[in-house]
Image (tube, rainbow, N blue to C red; front, top):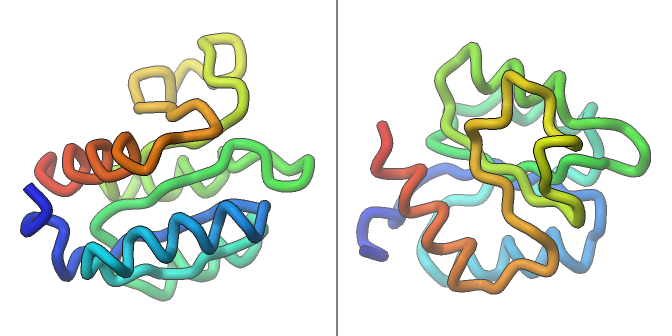
Length: 123
């Protein structure tokens, strides 16, 4: 399972630096090529536009700014992604994103790996 993640380019967008770098460390240990982490929407958009991505992990609320513009852009470019949020519910996700995985914070490391594996093999 883990071999399918090796060499994949995954964008990390998370405004909490501790969580962002924890996810980054986890993915680096799995030999994933991380892009970011981006701590805000503007940086996330720039990194998405400048890099060929295989998948992305997106925090929903980036310091009061919603991640939806980046999610729409990734959706248009057919980049698989999952949300990470303290509040994963149908009420918090716009209708166009309700079919996407939303991982509840705090997210166990195994669940992040399992979700990324699903994203990496969905291509």
